Length: 406
Image 1 (spheres, helix red, strand yellow):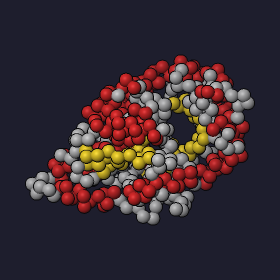
Image 2 (cartoon, helix red, strand yellow):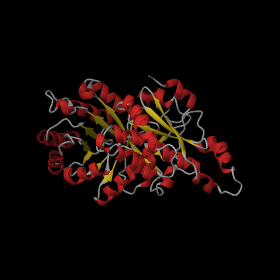
Image 3 (cartoon, rainbow, N blue to C red):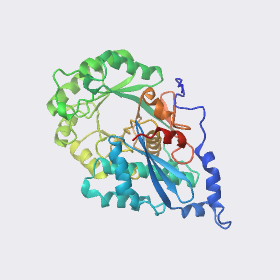
Image 4 (cartoon, rainbow, N blue to C red):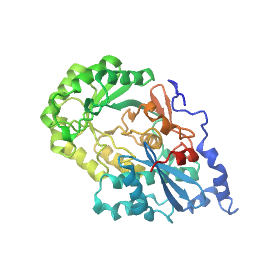
């Protein structure tokens, strides 16, 4: 598969989901000559939930009793555990239910398992099913998901290129600079350096952040918006010190997760001490956690991830809560297929989306992208909101099955 600068996410075999599924939908709708298409779709129930554990992702397929499928994705931090949890803890709340009962199904999945902990594997697994249900509903009525979410405020979302360096262990500063420059060459107008320091290596000595930030800024130039993600690696005092240096010496536009989000009082100290916008929220998975993050952590911008925070159903609640708190949203997103498509529909459907969402280096995911019949489109620095039915992209099922790993 070959990608060019303008449309590196298009495949030559791209086929619209609505066209692919038209025969199945038509068959279901023609079961009764007296039923309208909408009436036929209204009685559809979930028949099965399937998982596809891949090298770089875990896909989830929700199959309806009329043969139509919806596809979603859970964040793959532990694909084995997510797969087991979907089959042993969640699908029983979905099979046999109306595909239109998104809220009751979400509540059943979440609150029946809430005692296991509201973060991590529970909202991850729910997210994959929930996204697939929204995709399925869109296909049944031949509408893009953003229409079902309330309409769209925008046709495209500016993407920033995101990459991590594992605290300096994954690549050198020169290699990081080259990686950032590649994003710019492909048309990105914003780049994020993820230092990935983490809590277990807090306040590292020596600290490679400034070296890497200087190299990246030099490589991309002054006109590219640039921010640094510490990935929870500093105490408040160190985060404030480094935030001032990054702002003054590098011209960093945003500062992400400078301290552990387990310590919201420290996050508030950093937010109040700096004149640079602080971003956090990828590790907050529910509306209640996001409420505490905004009220107690005092961050300026939140970045929920639809593949982590319980899917589109919960993400819309988080967006409404953020709007009430006058907070903007920059969707977190580190996978290039279903997660990206779902995040685009989410971003399109909310008024308080900031002018960015995260995207990745597609070269690192070429095998995963190769499993798709079509994918999201990138053009002139923007990801375009899909207009096809459902979330707008379709996998090649046979390729997906061959790519499953144990």
